[in-house]
Image (cartoon, rainbow, N blue to C red; front, side, top):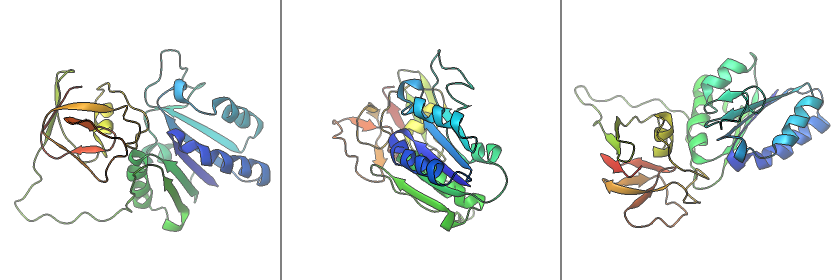
Length: 235
């Protein structure tokens, strides 16, 4: 069985792979997990739903992180939230699968190591990231010296009036904001489009690699940034 996992426009190459499987390997079970915000940006929706009706071996999992009022659960999408290891564990049948992933940095940096940590053999994980995304395999956490602790960081969303403790499990400030229900605009999630550019009121942001978008002075990109210290954001 093959598991295709796409985020945003990462569906484009996987759509061709899906069509190939359905046309040339009719006996092969195919599971597609496609994560988007809502129906407004759900690419190839009609095509995917048509294939799901025509091919009983094709299992379609649409995952909406911010469903619209008119989006119908079980019809427009099957799961709320994000594509993560917990969702895969809950919905995939038991047994060995081959995984193909394509998506933005936030998806790849969280899910590829999570699959390895789950016990999926490395030869069964195939991935390609778009934008400035780097993917690291799961590694054991280094032991901390006795009596030391990571410094606690706080992120304040000034417009929303919320101050929250930063957690390193979030791969970006955008993931962090969405997990806490703070509404911010976003687009590509790879540092290219600039939709999530937000004014920095205090503090600084670090990037694993330089964003492709030209960030204005005193601003940051939430989708690929993490706090270098305590932050105050105009969001």
